[in-house]
Image 1 (cartoon, rainbow, N blue to C red):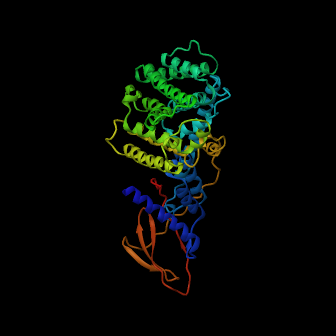
Image 2: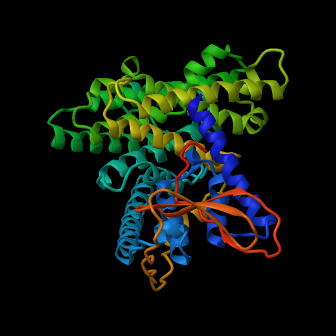
Image 3: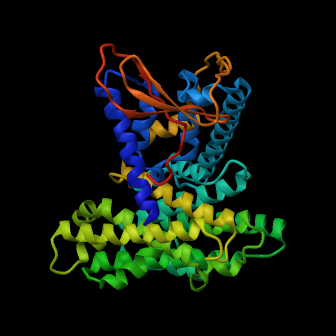
Length: 460
């Protein structure tokens, strides 16, 4: 409740700043400060990717300082370091995406013809959710998994006949490709290569063989896709409970995060790859991502004859169903945030809990206002900025230090020519802070430059 109140207060303050900057002649606001306030208000923190966020702050800060106080201690060296780090990360991401593209093409996933070609989308999502401090193996494991999931899910949804899907699922269960052909064989062979490679890397790093655990994890996903395909192709209408039980698995987000967790945290037990060992934070992530998908995909899935939670509410209008699902989603996300940010609620390391939170942000980005993952163009601009388009090469212009002012640490009441009264407080780290106290009629009209500190309002 306190966070919700803080969120409402923060939004109200920022909206007031924008209003005053537009309507009050006494207020001047730097354009890039207005841009950042509008960005904070328009784009929820939970739908933003850190890598692109860093780029925006660099570009806006280079254009002109966002805050007078911090500009007083502006460091050209720190700005240069931020730029060089972004360029290094961008170069790394580009190289890894090229490697992922080669792998996808070599195993035939790029050219199957029926599936959404989302290699770049999958890598962008993984790179955005896994910090650059981790080696490329972790990002590529998640990106390859996401590519496999996209192709296999599309095969079960659109291409395969029911008998073919049953044979493929049985092959994954027994890990035996005899009798498979065509697209089923392509998918199985790519999956087999991925599991073998991942298990070998883990064996080399940790000394344990997790081949069986990985196979079971993937079989669970394939079995859920088969159940959903059976519902669609036979016209069966599942109960809401059955739908969610299967849908939380078929979204396959646990496949992504749990495989990565094995490499991010050496103490993460392989047994937690199995469904009966899932931590609550993983279950909250599975439910949240399923609901995000269903809220933005129900129209398309209704046309395609697929099941969706929005469509399963008995005797309810679509608007009522949407409101109910949004309420469940809101509560589930709050519980996930609680588990991700508080200690002692899950037996996971901080890095693994952060991965769960970052993955939720990825899905929130893809399904923030529409189903951007299904769009061929919606994410291209973000991908280009994250991986391909370099930062503009602008000369850095560090500002001069602030001249010392003889104000004490206490507050000082001052009037400007317009008669508006302000309290000034000097703080060694924040510079001068001005707060309007009261408007008094006056003959002259002065000008006040309005600035706010660079703050990430992480609860907006």
